[in-house]
Image (cartoon, rainbow over all chains, first blue to last red):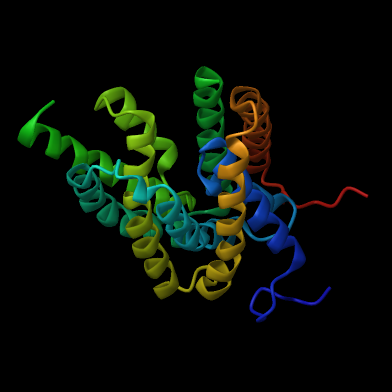
Length: 126
Length: 133
C-alpha cells in the first residue's frame, strides 16, 4: 500500500474516522479524541504517538465548529473559561513535550486506563 | 468556592486538563464538563459551551508544540478535522432525535473494551494493529 501519511490527499479511512468521530462527539457530547485515537491506531494503523498528535490537531476545526454551533447560545462563562485556559495552555505544552518522548507502550497503557475511566464515568452518567 | 480561591482551583485544574490534552490528544471536555457541573455547579449547557472555549486554545498550543517537535502532521490533522467538524454538526442535530442515554451506554461499553485492549497490548508489548484475516 502506498504511504499516504504525508500526501496531500486524505486516506478514505481517515475521512471515515473523521466523520464518525465527529458524529459520535456531537451525538454523545464526548470528546472526538476518545473515538479518533483508537480508530487511528486499531483501524488505520497509525503509530500510537502520531495518532494522538493527529487527534489533537483535528480537535482545532472540530471545536471551532462546536463554538459556531453552541457558543453563540450565550451560555459561555468567560471568566471561568479564561481561568481554565490560563492553566491548560501551560499544561498543553508540558503534555505535548511528554507525548514527544514517552515510550509507545507506556502511552498505550496510560491512554487505555484513561479510556477505562471515561467508560466508568459514562456508565455512571448513562 | 468564590473569588480568588475559585480562580486558583480553575487554573490548577486547567493545568491538569492541558497536560492530559497534550499527552493524549483529547480535547479535555471529558474532564472539564463534569468538573464544571459537579464541582462548580454549572448547568450542563453552560459547562459544554464554556469547555469549548478552553479546548480550542489548548489544542492550538499543544499542536504547535508537537509540530515543533516533529510529531504527527498538523496539516493532515487539520484537513482530517474538517470532516470531524462536519460529523459533529450532524451528530449534534441527530442527538435531538435519538435516545441519548442508551447510546451513551453502548458507547461506554465500546470505550471500555478498547481501553482494556490497549492496556493489554501495552503490557504485552505487541503491535495493536495486527491484521486478523
